[in-house]
Length: 613
Image 1: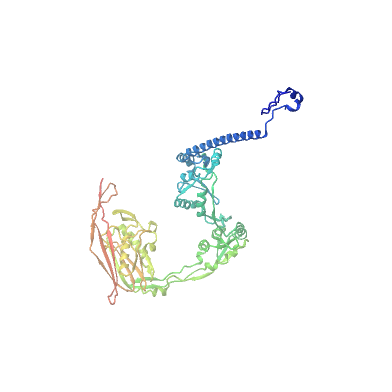
Image 2 (image 1 turned 90 degrees about the vertical axis):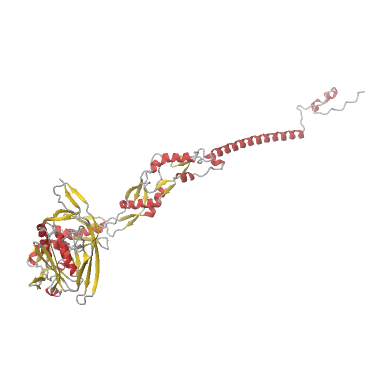
């Protein structure tokens, strides 16, 4: 008998101890490859996946940690710097400390931004200096536009290759900018020019209208502030002008309207002369005078209204027709036998120019050879008729004043001015002017070289001595109760004149004027002798006049001057002083005081002049 078989050992492999079983069932009992149980394989795969996940997590954590470390280091190192990628007008300042960035901007951009700003104001090109206009870059505010360091990691990453442009911020003194623009207006602004017609000789030429323009100050201020830095780079200033709007001022005429007036009216007007007939005499109005007399103004249709300047025409025609006219003659008041006598006035005869020239414009529209005009005549009454002279109330002398002590050459000038003023009539309410009445005082009008006082020293001049007449007529008007309108005392006291009651005169600068405020007129009578001049005012007495001269005070000593010229005239000099004059007027019947007026005068000391060789 066989012994019982041993129990099978655990494990995947069959036993080969029994040769019979091996021979009997070898094809089914022995597998070709080892077999693994299902629960064993699943466990192994789970372990593998866990290991992989753990490794990936470790790597990811390491990478993130490294990135965080880099981010933190980058953020820490860039603290206080301009964010990366920032540029200002093309200048890179990103990643720089703000102080260094500002220095770079100043060095690179300020030379360009200090150049004149180009402006286009309407159709006018102009420039303005930034400094004078109160415009300066504000670099602190400019860099602040770049912002602070970004915390977004992605933003920090892309800033490594991307740029971000920020504009230049302007600091502006608006008062200076406004002043600069106001000054610029003198160059850019213009008034509207209406169309008109000008003449080259007698050939008319059209002038086209041109609208005016005024710089729009509020808009200009805003545009310059917003645009003056645009286009400026480190290499070149801004090249595009800042366009400034303007307020257009329209015109009423058009180029077409001007040309229509030229062809329809002006060309026929100057095509031929005009013959003017007056009282059997002929005068000719030539084309050049016609051209000078034409006046133009805008009409309501874009064209021109044409008128005639009568004074221009009269100036050309009056001499040609002078023989047909007779001027009137005013009544004269003469003193004969110690009493005033009125010489009658005479009417004149002259052309009524206003009526005679009324048809002239219509005549000028005719371009034919026969262009004629007739002059009409009227009676010309005098400006002072016989009746008016008799009603002036000039009946008696109301004041007279005499001065003397003048040199012979001065006497010639005093006599000449006395001749001119003698017989002058001042009507109630009128003002007499010595300069106005005599006109220019020169050699052509009969005046000679005589002594004058120049800055306290004796000198010479045409018309010297006239101040003596000025003082005389001033005093005559003073005591006649005339109203003082203008007079000026000498700077230095002259002993032959009453202190504080005298006057000088200088053509075109210093005058003697008084007004007749009485209800009656005044006649000025002059009487000259080689040693004196007297002025008498005739009229009707309305007031009695008293002069009260105050004491001399506040004396000042003269300075000594040494003159080294042959024309030097020595002078002992004299003290200066202050003095007053009070004019009191009273009613001639009741003697009641009417007015009291005090005038204070200060005279300069006359220099002590020493003539040295």
